[in-house]
Amino acid sequence: MMNKYLPQVEENRKASYEVDPVFLNRWSPRSFKQDPVPDEVLFSLFEAARWAPSASNEQPWRFILARSREDKERFYPFIADGNRVWCEKAPVLALILSKTVNVKGAHNRAHAFDAGAAWGYLALEATRRGLITHAMGGFDPDKAREVLGVPDEYELHAVIAIGYQGEKDALPEHLQEREKPSGRRELSETVFEGVFGRT
Ligand SMILES: Cc1cc2nc3c(=O)[nH]c(=O)nc-3n(C[C@H](O)[C@H](O)[C@H](O)COP(=O)(O)O)c2cc1C
Image 1 (spheres, protein in one colour):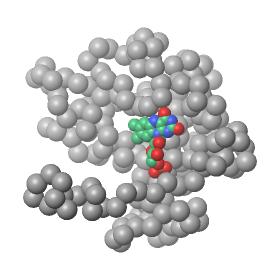
Image 2 (cartoon, helix red, strand yellow):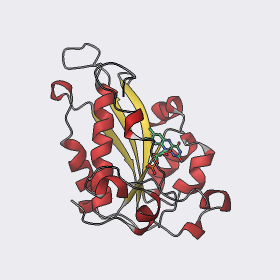
Image 3 (tube, helix red, strand yellow):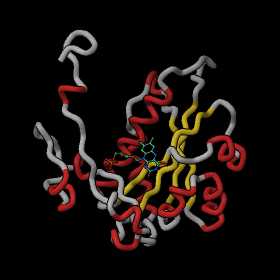
């Protein structure tokens, strides 16, 4: 998919096993350029999400986009101030939600799991195309549900900022030092053998 690590990633991240660089190159910067994302590019991210696996192929994920000034103004009031300070520059915001009820009308236990997979695909396709994404759980889901007219059977998960990476210096000072790819705990603390906790 990608043949090389981005410079910031090369400095801050190291894989213990060989993987495609796209996985490490995806990270969540906060500095966005205001440049718009062309439709063909933006919709390729949702195309990637579309092909995520889901329980019984229910495809419970949904996305609500905000690109116009009018739509963004509807989003901003339900986004936490700490996120608003940087995400207002992003040309695209996308709220990810998922349908909690399956085609038979029963609760779909996998709805959030499946929406997570779709978001993961979206984020990787964005990275592959030189875009950045940043998920935000810091928003008020009740307020968002009300202003966007989201029916009760959908759960709201995150607002994703999508666009092109801007300069670190364009961020407020307190965010500049955090503007670098994070690390991860060791695989041995995550993958167990046979029973929980056995490494
Ligand atoms: C569901 C979810 C909610 C998140 N909420 C926020 C948020 O409200 N504000 C923020 O700045 N980052 C948020 N993040 C970004 C995470 O902090 C980030 O993904 C994590 O630290 C790993 O860093 P990386 O994405 O750069 O690899 C969120 C990420 C996810 C997946």
